[in-house]
Image 1: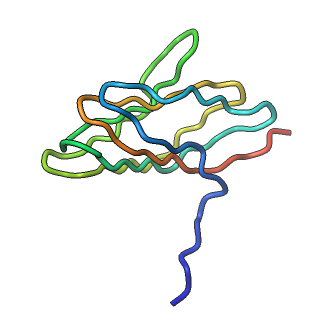
Image 2: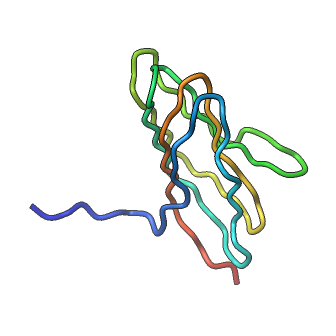
Amino acid sequence: MTNPVNPYSVLIAQGALAPNTNSQTYTVPAGYVYVIRDISTRQTGGSGVNTYLRVTGATPAIAASVDAPSGASGGHWVGHLVLPSGTTFEISTQVAGNNYWVSGYQLVVD
């Protein structure tokens, strides 16, 4: 059996969160744009926990919400979220802690 091929160019962010906390702040590097295509979560305690990708800075806003159904041990978001160079963001969670993985494309801006 062959190993699966990762269809994305980069694992943008990953980590583990304690309950009711935010991740470190991530910044899209100068000269690049991130196209976030996939966010996966795995709860480390409890179930049915929402996880958010929040754009930070001057106008903070929730850009993506990963909703885990009640009784589920994880959640998954698939979409097309474009973050230009210099954008800062973080991952936040409610109630129970979780692990998260954010992947997509890191594209060069000409």
